[in-house]
Image 1: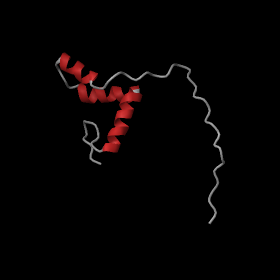
Image 2: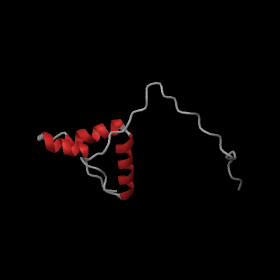
Image 3: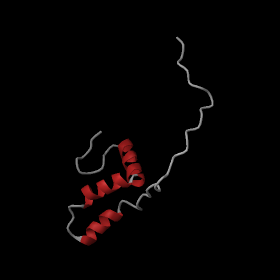
Image 4: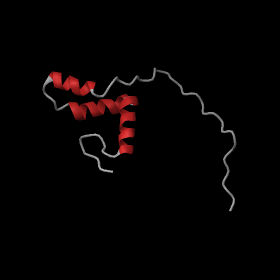
Length: 81
């Protein structure tokens, strides 16, 4: 997989992961905005660059606790030879 040092990855699978991170991770998106749009001097062009990332991801509320994982229907065991 080829990846440019200052841009998104070029392989399809990597692109899917990249877009998921931009959509769901506030930290990742802010970092990519800084790298990809930060050097742009013109404010309207920079605003267009930032807008190209789509809507900002929503951070989880403070104190959020994920529910415990559900139990598997069947316990996993090591296969016998």
